[in-house]
Length: 385
Ligand code: SF4
Image (tube, rainbow, N blue to C red; front, side, top):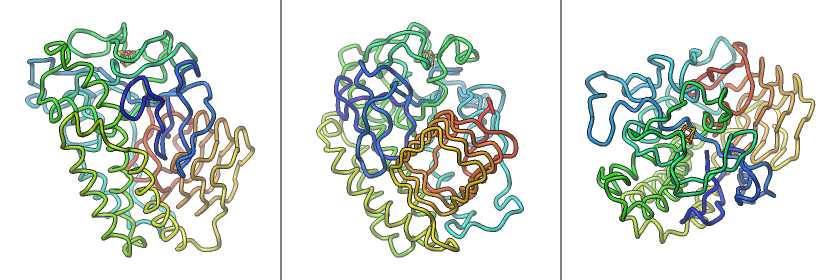
Protein backbone atom coordinates (compact mmCIF):
# COMPACT_ATOMS: atom_id res chain seq x y z
CA UNK A 1 0.00 0.00 0.00
CA UNK A 2 0.43 2.16 1.25
CA UNK A 3 -1.64 4.60 0.63
CA UNK A 4 -0.04 7.74 0.88
CA UNK A 5 -2.24 8.91 3.50
CA UNK A 6 -1.84 11.74 5.77
CA UNK A 7 -0.45 10.92 9.08
CA UNK A 8 -3.75 11.55 10.64
CA UNK A 9 -6.22 11.99 7.93
CA UNK A 10 -6.76 10.68 4.47
CA UNK A 11 -6.48 14.10 3.03
CA UNK A 12 -3.04 14.77 4.33
CA UNK A 13 0.12 13.75 2.72
CA UNK A 14 1.58 10.71 4.28
CA UNK A 15 5.11 10.91 5.44
CA UNK A 16 5.94 7.29 5.48
CA UNK A 17 8.48 5.80 7.68
CA UNK A 18 11.30 3.82 6.31
CA UNK A 19 11.02 0.53 4.70
CA UNK A 20 8.10 0.83 2.48
CA UNK A 21 7.47 0.37 -1.11
CA UNK A 22 4.39 2.23 -1.86
CA UNK A 23 1.75 1.69 -4.31
CA UNK A 24 2.08 3.80 -7.39
CA UNK A 25 -0.47 6.47 -7.74
CA UNK A 26 -0.52 9.78 -9.37
CA UNK A 27 1.21 12.70 -7.91
CA UNK A 28 -2.11 14.44 -8.05
CA UNK A 29 -3.10 12.34 -5.12
CA UNK A 30 -0.25 13.74 -3.19
CA UNK A 31 1.35 10.40 -2.73
CA UNK A 32 5.07 10.35 -2.58
CA UNK A 33 7.33 7.45 -2.96
CA UNK A 34 8.56 5.83 0.16
CA UNK A 35 10.59 8.09 2.27
CA UNK A 36 14.13 7.33 3.00
CA UNK A 37 14.92 5.64 6.21
CA UNK A 38 16.07 8.89 7.58
CA UNK A 39 12.62 10.24 7.18
CA UNK A 40 13.20 12.48 4.23
CA UNK A 41 10.42 12.38 1.80
CA UNK A 42 11.34 12.23 -1.80
CA UNK A 43 9.61 14.02 -4.59
CA UNK A 44 6.45 12.37 -5.64
CA UNK A 45 6.86 9.73 -8.27
CA UNK A 46 4.24 7.80 -10.02
CA UNK A 47 2.58 7.26 -6.78
CA UNK A 48 2.63 4.10 -5.03
CA UNK A 49 0.74 2.34 -2.57
CA UNK A 50 2.15 -0.86 -1.48
CA UNK A 51 -0.46 -3.08 -0.20
CA UNK A 52 -1.40 -6.56 0.39
CA UNK A 53 -4.29 -7.50 -1.68
CA UNK A 54 -7.13 -6.60 0.51
CA UNK A 55 -10.48 -7.69 0.75
CA UNK A 56 -10.05 -11.07 -0.51
CA UNK A 57 -11.48 -14.23 0.50
CA UNK A 58 -12.79 -13.01 3.69
CA UNK A 59 -14.40 -15.95 5.18
CA UNK A 60 -16.29 -13.76 7.46
CA UNK A 61 -18.41 -10.88 6.68
CA UNK A 62 -19.82 -8.51 9.19
CA UNK A 63 -21.42 -11.34 11.03
CA UNK A 64 -19.99 -14.55 9.76
CA UNK A 65 -17.02 -15.80 11.68
CA UNK A 66 -16.57 -19.30 10.60
CA UNK A 67 -13.08 -18.98 9.32
CA UNK A 68 -11.68 -20.39 12.51
CA UNK A 69 -13.70 -23.45 11.87
CA UNK A 70 -12.10 -23.77 8.52
CA UNK A 71 -8.75 -23.15 10.14
CA UNK A 72 -7.80 -20.57 7.59
CA UNK A 73 -8.00 -16.86 7.27
CA UNK A 74 -9.33 -15.05 4.28
CA UNK A 75 -5.96 -14.81 2.70
CA UNK A 76 -5.95 -18.52 2.34
CA UNK A 77 -3.20 -18.94 4.85
CA UNK A 78 -3.52 -21.46 7.52
CA UNK A 79 -4.57 -19.62 10.58
CA UNK A 80 -1.62 -18.56 12.61
CA UNK A 81 0.96 -19.34 10.01
CA UNK A 82 2.43 -17.76 6.95
CA UNK A 83 1.99 -20.84 4.95
CA UNK A 84 -0.20 -20.55 1.94
CA UNK A 85 -3.22 -22.72 2.17
CA UNK A 86 -4.68 -22.42 -1.18
CA UNK A 87 -3.97 -19.94 -3.80
CA UNK A 88 -4.96 -16.65 -2.38
CA UNK A 89 -3.20 -13.39 -2.19
CA UNK A 90 -0.10 -13.05 -4.16
CA UNK A 91 1.34 -10.87 -1.49
CA UNK A 92 1.66 -13.64 0.96
CA UNK A 93 0.69 -16.61 -0.94
CA UNK A 94 2.50 -19.18 -2.74
CA UNK A 95 5.95 -18.89 -1.65
CA UNK A 96 8.45 -21.23 -0.45
CA UNK A 97 10.75 -20.81 2.43
CA UNK A 98 14.31 -21.78 2.37
CA UNK A 99 15.65 -23.14 5.54
CA UNK A 100 17.68 -20.72 7.58
CA UNK A 101 21.18 -20.56 6.32
CA UNK A 102 20.25 -22.17 3.10
CA UNK A 103 23.63 -23.79 2.83
CA UNK A 104 25.41 -20.48 2.83
CA UNK A 105 27.52 -18.80 5.38
CA UNK A 106 25.60 -17.77 8.44
CA UNK A 107 24.52 -14.19 8.59
CA UNK A 108 26.30 -12.46 11.44
CA UNK A 109 23.64 -9.84 11.76
CA UNK A 110 20.97 -12.26 12.72
CA UNK A 111 20.59 -15.20 14.88
CA UNK A 112 18.32 -16.88 12.44
CA UNK A 113 16.13 -18.68 14.93
CA UNK A 114 15.75 -15.60 17.09
CA UNK A 115 15.05 -13.47 14.10
CA UNK A 116 12.34 -15.79 12.94
CA UNK A 117 10.83 -16.07 16.37
CA UNK A 118 10.83 -12.37 16.97
CA UNK A 119 8.74 -11.64 13.93
CA UNK A 120 6.76 -14.82 13.67
CA UNK A 121 5.61 -14.57 17.26
CA UNK A 122 4.00 -11.26 16.41
CA UNK A 123 1.04 -12.46 14.41
CA UNK A 124 -0.58 -9.12 15.17
CA UNK A 125 1.99 -7.48 12.93
CA UNK A 126 0.78 -9.43 9.93
CA UNK A 127 -2.32 -8.39 8.06
CA UNK A 128 -5.34 -10.48 8.86
CA UNK A 129 -7.93 -9.40 6.35
CA UNK A 130 -10.53 -11.71 7.83
CA UNK A 131 -10.64 -9.48 10.87
CA UNK A 132 -10.48 -6.21 8.96
CA UNK A 133 -13.27 -4.25 7.35
CA UNK A 134 -11.29 -3.81 4.14
CA UNK A 135 -9.95 -0.52 5.37
CA UNK A 136 -7.21 -0.32 2.78
CA UNK A 137 -9.85 -0.69 0.05
CA UNK A 138 -11.86 2.20 1.42
CA UNK A 139 -9.83 4.55 3.54
CA UNK A 140 -6.94 5.00 1.19
CA UNK A 141 -6.90 6.86 -2.10
CA UNK A 142 -5.29 5.74 -5.30
CA UNK A 143 -5.02 7.19 -8.72
CA UNK A 144 -5.25 5.66 -12.13
CA UNK A 145 -1.77 4.54 -13.05
CA UNK A 146 0.25 1.49 -13.89
CA UNK A 147 -0.79 0.10 -10.53
CA UNK A 148 -4.45 1.00 -10.43
CA UNK A 149 -6.96 0.85 -13.22
CA UNK A 150 -9.08 3.65 -11.82
CA UNK A 151 -9.09 6.64 -9.52
CA UNK A 152 -10.47 6.34 -6.03
CA UNK A 153 -10.61 9.05 -3.42
CA UNK A 154 -9.94 8.40 0.22
CA UNK A 155 -12.96 7.24 2.15
CA UNK A 156 -14.81 5.78 -0.81
CA UNK A 157 -15.05 2.03 -1.24
CA UNK A 158 -13.24 0.65 -4.26
CA UNK A 159 -15.69 -0.36 -6.95
CA UNK A 160 -14.36 -3.90 -6.74
CA UNK A 161 -15.12 -4.25 -3.07
CA UNK A 162 -18.03 -6.52 -2.28
CA UNK A 163 -20.57 -6.20 0.48
CA UNK A 164 -18.83 -8.88 2.50
CA UNK A 165 -15.57 -6.89 2.41
CA UNK A 166 -13.98 -9.21 -0.08
CA UNK A 167 -12.34 -8.09 -3.26
CA UNK A 168 -14.31 -9.15 -6.31
CA UNK A 169 -11.21 -9.49 -8.45
CA UNK A 170 -8.80 -10.86 -5.95
CA UNK A 171 -7.54 -13.70 -8.08
CA UNK A 172 -7.12 -11.38 -11.08
CA UNK A 173 -5.72 -8.22 -9.57
CA UNK A 174 -2.71 -8.04 -11.84
CA UNK A 175 -4.69 -8.97 -14.93
CA UNK A 176 -7.31 -6.38 -14.09
CA UNK A 177 -4.82 -3.58 -13.73
CA UNK A 178 -4.50 -3.51 -9.96
CA UNK A 179 -1.00 -4.81 -9.28
CA UNK A 180 -0.63 -2.07 -6.69
CA UNK A 181 -3.08 -3.95 -4.52
CA UNK A 182 -0.78 -6.94 -4.41
CA UNK A 183 2.09 -5.12 -2.78
CA UNK A 184 0.44 -3.49 0.15
CA UNK A 185 0.96 -4.45 3.75
CA UNK A 186 -0.82 -2.82 6.65
CA UNK A 187 1.38 -4.68 9.16
CA UNK A 188 -1.74 -5.71 11.05
CA UNK A 189 -3.13 -2.21 11.40
CA UNK A 190 -6.37 -3.12 9.68
CA UNK A 191 -7.50 -5.69 12.18
CA UNK A 192 -6.32 -3.55 15.09
CA UNK A 193 -8.46 -0.62 13.99
CA UNK A 194 -11.41 -2.82 13.10
CA UNK A 195 -11.48 -5.04 16.13
CA UNK A 196 -9.85 -3.05 18.90
CA UNK A 197 -10.14 0.65 18.22
CA UNK A 198 -13.68 0.33 16.90
CA UNK A 199 -14.70 -2.81 18.75
CA UNK A 200 -15.65 -4.91 15.74
CA UNK A 201 -18.32 -2.54 14.44
CA UNK A 202 -17.78 -1.96 10.75
CA UNK A 203 -18.23 1.20 8.78
CA UNK A 204 -21.25 -0.07 6.94
CA UNK A 205 -23.14 -0.71 10.16
CA UNK A 206 -21.91 2.46 11.80
CA UNK A 207 -21.54 5.11 9.11
CA UNK A 208 -21.22 7.82 11.73
CA UNK A 209 -17.88 6.43 12.83
CA UNK A 210 -16.68 5.60 9.33
CA UNK A 211 -14.75 8.80 8.83
CA UNK A 212 -12.97 8.44 12.12
CA UNK A 213 -12.11 4.85 11.32
CA UNK A 214 -10.69 5.82 7.97
CA UNK A 215 -8.60 8.54 9.54
CA UNK A 216 -7.22 6.30 12.23
CA UNK A 217 -6.21 3.55 9.84
CA UNK A 218 -3.25 5.27 8.12
CA UNK A 219 -1.94 6.42 11.48
CA UNK A 220 -2.25 2.95 12.89
CA UNK A 221 -0.47 1.56 9.90
CA UNK A 222 2.52 3.73 10.58
CA UNK A 223 2.54 2.69 14.21
CA UNK A 224 2.40 -0.96 13.27
CA UNK A 225 5.19 -0.47 10.79
CA UNK A 226 7.31 0.90 13.62
CA UNK A 227 6.39 -2.09 15.75
CA UNK A 228 7.41 -4.38 12.94
CA UNK A 229 10.86 -2.83 12.62
CA UNK A 230 11.41 -2.66 16.34
CA UNK A 231 10.51 -6.32 16.63
CA UNK A 232 13.01 -7.20 13.95
CA UNK A 233 15.70 -5.10 15.63
CA UNK A 234 15.10 -7.00 18.86
CA UNK A 235 15.90 -10.18 16.97
CA UNK A 236 19.34 -8.92 16.00
CA UNK A 237 21.87 -10.45 18.34
CA UNK A 238 24.54 -7.78 17.70
CA UNK A 239 22.01 -5.13 18.70
CA UNK A 240 21.78 -6.54 22.21
CA UNK A 241 23.19 -3.35 23.79
CA UNK A 242 20.10 -1.61 22.45
CA UNK A 243 17.56 -4.14 23.57
CA UNK A 244 16.45 -2.13 26.58
CA UNK A 245 15.57 1.04 24.66
CA UNK A 246 14.18 -1.04 21.83
CA UNK A 247 11.87 -2.87 24.20
CA UNK A 248 10.86 0.39 25.82
CA UNK A 249 10.01 1.93 22.46
CA UNK A 250 8.12 -1.19 21.46
CA UNK A 251 6.03 -1.16 24.62
CA UNK A 252 5.35 2.54 24.31
CA UNK A 253 4.12 2.37 20.74
CA UNK A 254 2.18 -0.80 21.39
CA UNK A 255 0.38 1.03 24.16
CA UNK A 256 -0.39 3.93 21.85
CA UNK A 257 -2.03 1.60 19.35
CA UNK A 258 -4.49 0.55 22.04
CA UNK A 259 -5.70 4.05 22.75
CA UNK A 260 -8.92 5.64 21.61
CA UNK A 261 -9.47 6.81 18.08
CA UNK A 262 -9.14 10.38 19.25
CA UNK A 263 -5.86 9.77 21.03
CA UNK A 264 -4.42 7.99 18.01
CA UNK A 265 -5.32 10.82 15.69
CA UNK A 266 -3.61 13.31 17.96
CA UNK A 267 -0.29 11.52 17.85
CA UNK A 268 2.78 13.14 16.39
CA UNK A 269 3.75 10.18 14.27
CA UNK A 270 6.65 11.96 12.65
CA UNK A 271 8.24 12.52 16.02
CA UNK A 272 7.74 8.89 16.98
CA UNK A 273 9.20 7.82 13.70
CA UNK A 274 12.25 9.93 14.24
CA UNK A 275 12.86 8.46 17.68
CA UNK A 276 12.44 4.93 16.45
CA UNK A 277 14.55 5.50 13.40
CA UNK A 278 17.48 6.61 15.52
CA UNK A 279 17.32 3.30 17.33
CA UNK A 280 16.95 1.31 14.14
CA UNK A 281 19.92 3.06 12.61
CA UNK A 282 22.10 2.15 15.56
CA UNK A 283 20.83 -1.42 15.51
CA UNK A 284 21.65 -1.63 11.83
CA UNK A 285 25.15 -0.32 12.38
CA UNK A 286 25.78 -2.84 15.13
CA UNK A 287 24.50 -5.68 12.99
CA UNK A 288 26.43 -4.68 9.90
CA UNK A 289 29.60 -4.14 11.89
CA UNK A 290 29.75 -7.92 12.19
CA UNK A 291 30.09 -8.29 8.45
CA UNK A 292 33.62 -8.92 7.21
CA UNK A 293 34.96 -5.90 5.38
CA UNK A 294 33.19 -2.60 5.35
CA UNK A 295 29.79 -2.49 3.76
CA UNK A 296 29.26 0.30 1.31
CA UNK A 297 27.14 3.26 2.18
CA UNK A 298 24.45 3.90 -0.39
CA UNK A 299 22.04 5.51 1.99
CA UNK A 300 19.46 7.42 0.02
CA UNK A 301 21.37 6.88 -3.22
CA UNK A 302 19.67 7.23 -6.56
CA UNK A 303 20.39 3.86 -8.11
CA UNK A 304 17.42 3.76 -10.40
CA UNK A 305 18.13 1.35 -13.23
CA UNK A 306 21.67 0.83 -11.97
CA UNK A 307 23.65 -2.10 -13.29
CA UNK A 308 24.51 -3.92 -10.12
CA UNK A 309 24.53 -7.46 -11.37
CA UNK A 310 26.76 -9.56 -9.15
CA UNK A 311 27.64 -6.55 -7.00
CA UNK A 312 29.12 -7.09 -3.59
CA UNK A 313 26.65 -5.23 -1.40
CA UNK A 314 27.06 -7.39 1.62
CA UNK A 315 26.50 -5.36 4.76
CA UNK A 316 25.84 -2.23 2.72
CA UNK A 317 23.54 0.52 3.81
CA UNK A 318 20.86 0.91 1.20
CA UNK A 319 18.54 2.79 3.51
CA UNK A 320 16.05 4.69 1.44
CA UNK A 321 17.96 3.97 -1.75
CA UNK A 322 16.14 4.35 -5.02
CA UNK A 323 16.60 0.97 -6.66
CA UNK A 324 13.69 1.06 -9.08
CA UNK A 325 14.39 -1.29 -11.99
CA UNK A 326 17.95 -1.81 -10.82
CA UNK A 327 19.70 -4.90 -12.07
CA UNK A 328 20.61 -6.74 -8.90
CA UNK A 329 20.79 -10.17 -10.45
CA UNK A 330 23.18 -12.34 -8.51
CA UNK A 331 24.04 -9.48 -6.15
CA UNK A 332 25.28 -10.25 -2.68
CA UNK A 333 22.87 -8.38 -0.43
CA UNK A 334 23.51 -10.40 2.68
CA UNK A 335 23.06 -8.32 5.81
CA UNK A 336 22.39 -5.20 3.75
CA UNK A 337 20.10 -2.65 5.35
CA UNK A 338 17.20 -2.20 2.96
CA UNK A 339 14.87 -0.16 5.09
CA UNK A 340 12.89 2.18 2.90
CA UNK A 341 14.67 1.03 -0.26
CA UNK A 342 12.49 1.34 -3.32
CA UNK A 343 12.73 -2.02 -5.02
CA UNK A 344 9.96 -1.62 -7.54
CA UNK A 345 10.78 -3.71 -10.57
CA UNK A 346 14.29 -4.30 -9.27
CA UNK A 347 15.66 -7.53 -10.65
CA UNK A 348 16.60 -9.76 -7.75
CA UNK A 349 16.97 -12.97 -9.67
CA UNK A 350 19.71 -15.01 -8.10
CA UNK A 351 20.42 -12.35 -5.48
CA UNK A 352 21.25 -13.34 -1.94
CA UNK A 353 19.18 -11.52 0.66
CA UNK A 354 20.19 -13.66 3.59
CA UNK A 355 20.04 -11.56 6.72
CA UNK A 356 18.87 -8.47 4.87
CA UNK A 357 17.79 -5.93 7.46
CA UNK A 358 14.33 -4.43 7.63
CA UNK A 359 13.29 -5.88 4.31
CA UNK A 360 9.53 -6.24 4.07
CA UNK A 361 7.32 -8.57 2.12
CA UNK A 362 5.84 -5.62 0.30
CA UNK A 363 9.27 -4.61 -0.97
CA UNK A 364 9.82 -8.11 -2.27
CA UNK A 365 6.40 -8.22 -3.86
CA UNK A 366 7.19 -5.08 -5.81
CA UNK A 367 10.45 -6.52 -7.14
CA UNK A 368 11.25 -9.33 -9.54
CA UNK A 369 13.01 -12.48 -8.58
CA UNK A 370 13.16 -16.17 -9.18
CA UNK A 371 13.62 -19.50 -7.47
CA UNK A 372 17.34 -18.77 -7.08
CA UNK A 373 16.78 -15.61 -5.06
CA UNK A 374 17.75 -16.35 -1.47
CA UNK A 375 15.32 -14.81 1.00
CA UNK A 376 15.43 -14.14 4.72
CA UNK A 377 13.50 -16.88 6.51
CA UNK A 378 10.78 -14.52 7.66
CA UNK A 379 9.80 -13.58 4.13
CA UNK A 380 8.12 -15.53 1.40
CA UNK A 381 8.70 -15.90 -2.29
CA UNK A 382 6.11 -13.82 -4.16
CA UNK A 383 3.76 -15.87 -6.28
CA UNK A 384 4.54 -13.90 -9.43
CA UNK A 385 8.26 -14.62 -9.31
S1 SF4 B 1 -9.15 -3.91 -6.39
FE1 SF4 B 1 -10.25 -2.69 -4.86
S2 SF4 B 1 -11.33 -4.17 -3.59
FE2 SF4 B 1 -9.75 -5.28 -4.71
S3 SF4 B 1 -7.95 -5.31 -3.37
FE3 SF4 B 1 -7.72 -3.51 -4.69
S4 SF4 B 1 -8.65 -1.80 -3.52
FE4 SF4 B 1 -9.38 -3.71 -2.57
